[in-house]
Amino acid sequence: MRTSQYPEKQTLAISTDTLVAGNHFLPDIDPADLAYKALAVNLSDLAAMGADPAWLTLALTLPDVDEAWLESFSDSLFDLLNYYDMQLIGGDTTRGHYQ
Image 1 (cartoon, rainbow, N blue to C red):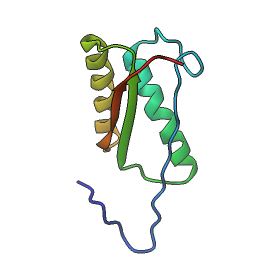
Image 2 (image 1 turned 30 degrees about the horizontal axis):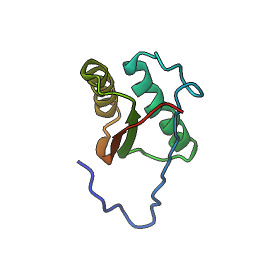
Image 3 (image 1 turned 45 degrees about the vertical axis):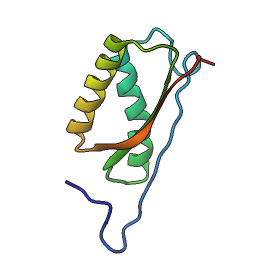
Image 4 (image 1 turned 180 degrees about the horizontal axis):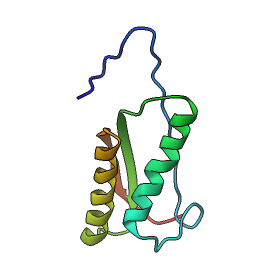
């Protein structure tokens, strides 16, 4: 398990990419695929910096609550986080319309 303290002379690298329905993915994308894409675009940025990813925050805005969609998205996301030995440490969820 990682902690918020890291060895001396190491740098904290952060990546944030916003994905917008209709711009970065089709609104009817499979939620498992969207979870993969959301993590992959940020892991790619971190790899380019030579970083070892440890944590993730997630901001998610959905037009409606769809339990099956959320379960598929979450299952895929947590499978990927386990694979990369990462932890979800916070974020925000809200209801809103696709822009």
